[in-house]
Image (cartoon, rainbow, N blue to C red; front, side, top):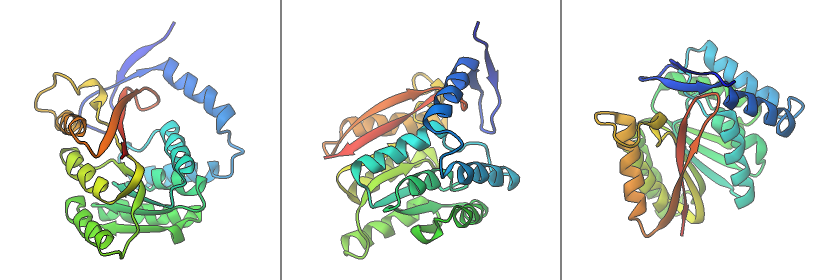
Amino acid sequence: MNKTTVIKRGVPGEWEHDTRWTDIDNYTLSHLHPSSRPNHKSLSQTLKHAEAENLPDIGLPVVQGKLFAMQCRMLGVRHSLEVGTLGGYSAIWLLTENPQLRVTTVEFNEHHAKTAADNFEAAGVADRVETIVGAGAEVLPNLLREVEQGKRERFGFTFIDADKLNNWNYFDLAVKMSVPRACIVVDNVVAHGRLVGSQGDVMAQGGREVVERVGKDDRVEGTVLQTVGDQGYDGFLIAVVK
């Protein structure tokens, strides 16, 4: 019999947890990404260092990390944009699975950026990461200008996991900086099940805005995938640039 509980996990609100979700993740990962894989140690150390530095426990689930790394491989992505670095875990997934890839990552919090820099160095990928410290709403327009001026190459994959009320702003700017058929992911749009019907919830509000505006945007095609696992019930928006 499954056990479903509600637990607190470092963010406002409550997260659901079902032991079936983690049991299945643990089983499948033991076969599809076992500890013998070359990047397993680096990824584990990244999480431990982030915890030691008191970063919030809101990082990317391991299954999604591998999924996004595989998407970059399938698309042959050479340059990825990330909005919200945290401890560098998601970027390290992409970089260690794609040796041709370079990542530009944007982080508002200086302590988070410093922790990520330590993790990039320890993982041996620091030479393929550009970390820009600043607010995404200020940094991304500057990146766009550089792209339009030919000073920076366009992105083939963008991962957005930052301040949720700016989901659409970041998405819109990412589209303008993307190559055709690029993939853009906006994390946490399901807002742990609060996407529909919840009022006064910043995460849900940001999720609804980006879902509704992407649906009207002729530049892209998108869908939302709901997810379960060690970080509870959530989901992300995934879109392809036409």
